Image (cartoon, rainbow, N blue to C red):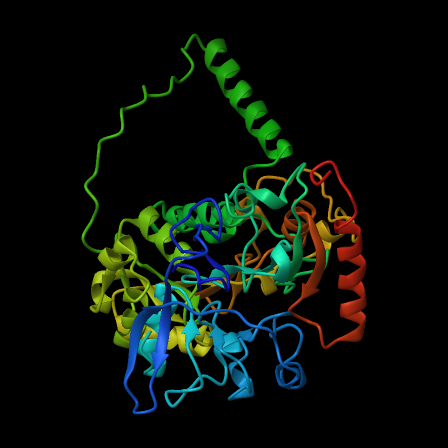
Length: 466
């Protein structure tokens, strides 16, 4: 999506970037914007148009919180729960999660809605309105000022997973490093603005979970052994002692010690059309999100992915060719089933297993940052600066399976579309910004005070922003 005339620039946060949850794409200030056009006669269509930013009126301030109503504008971000907002000329939707589009209905006709194309697909499909996570965007607003003064610049992150690549994007480069340009305001996703939540990078989690599932499903290893990790030094020493004793006894009898067979070159195997395992893998998801986990496991197993017709329509709206090729409507053809996160319960999973008929057990993956255990990481991260030592490699031994029964295992994994505490610190400290406004957990006074303390430390001058 382009920019809204002189109103601002939209920075894409698409789902196909393996290095970062959020990929930013520049948009020049005078190009067109994808807009949801709502006419009074119910004709809702995707159109391209330009809008002009104008001075705000007091009615927007009285109706909408500072998080959603942007200074010196007549537009709002993720503010659909307020209904029709007087003097609001444009409504922005950062991504399709219910806590951001809440209040948006098929009957909405209060003004144009700006969002990414993927979010527009989902809004049209799920809500009947024609056009963190796939389709999510970071929005950089540039507000012209009178008398030739520099424009005001406000960055809204929506839900995002911060990554160093963001700071290298051309649209943000002017606000990074030794520069005189500064962002006026940063509206920051502070879901995990607490040192307890310093979970590993997304790709590390995907790779580790995919390898664990491969070992269990294809290698037929017991999951308890996989998460136990490699043999301990003590076990290795005992095995070495017995091997030496056997070799010595053989030599004493004039026999040559047993020799290992020469290694055989691996034979290429074509990807199977059906699951190669009697373990069914179930992945919990929300309406959107967690698709990287699904694709990572599917690559490791070389199998199809089943979901019901409604979920399939949502996934097809993401416009991901790889995911589209993996999907099947035949549950017997797939080694992976996608279900709602709320269905990751013993009884529901046992029912799914019974209906399939061909699998003997189920391994359910619960990918969410809220399952992360903070005990080890919290002590190693400064609650003010967010500085942490280099992270240890994320391994299967860090996972804590829940054995619901002999046939049902639930595996929580620390995968999130939100930034960890250390990632938030990295992102804010890398930018030259005058004011940072938290957008999550702002209703709790103690949490707000803690976040404000962290942000004050993060925005102090540093080598990155000098």
